[in-house]
Image (cartoon, rainbow, N blue to C red; front, side):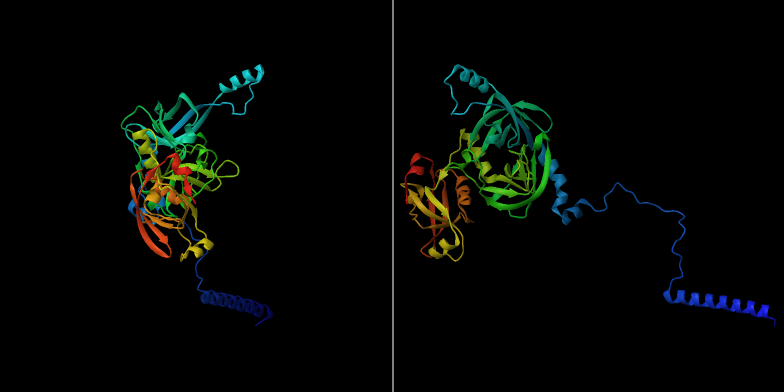
Length: 400
């Protein structure tokens, strides 16, 4: 065999070795498939039917209930516009003719405010915040329904101490909202806020109840000694124009009237506040029936309990509200309550701060009887108290 044939034989053996070695490696890795395969045809599944039925979605999260709640509640929410008069302050100076004409001109200036309201009866009663319609001129309040029908509204009555007002329009067969029991609301519950923020009508936002029994500093009449300052806190977005709108639970029931926000810039920053529906219901019914609110009173002055005071009173934990004064001949004194009594519950519902106790009493009428659970001298006692009403004596004759 000549040298040329030997060279070709060597090349052939080398190639055979490479093929055998490569095949062995591929066999070890189990990789006999190509990285790319030809696509002849494919189909994309499309259907108008949901993959999961509504009943399945409801089991996953209350979030999927929101569209149904919105459809149910939105017809009960109204858009309110008020024409208000801009009047001079009490410290205006009328000493000169120039000043006189200036202030006369200022008294004739008007502005338009907007807000929200909730239909509470089929025959046209609507609840909103007092600050939404405060200062409105005669025939200056207009209510627009969800179906865009417009009505002039009359003020039935207002209660500045709760920042609530009731309006009446000449309409029937309206979609009235269903009230829920705000005492059953719990932190973490899903809620939806309905209203008209920034004149964006029929807006719905969602969040949870982030706290209960909040005391919020609001300017004006709400800081009076008779104010009821006990709010549901929510992180559902509430902005200007939401005032007077509804806060509802996942059953579509009203649990609060949206009233205020905690903010440093005037807009939503994570916290909104609503008046509990139990208080709204009582105030609304009073205004419709009597034209004003009949406020029940225990006839006591109170303070909250801190850790130090709980130790002094022998309490096992920090809870309840301490009685520090009694109105002469008031409901509490007549029922033999004493200074340093700690009220733990009203009709079986625990109270742990002053505003919570005030709200629990405010939902009643003068003459109603409530059952108080009291801590006295390291013992628990029960007292039935027939509630009184608001009189000058109730707020001025406290014995401390």
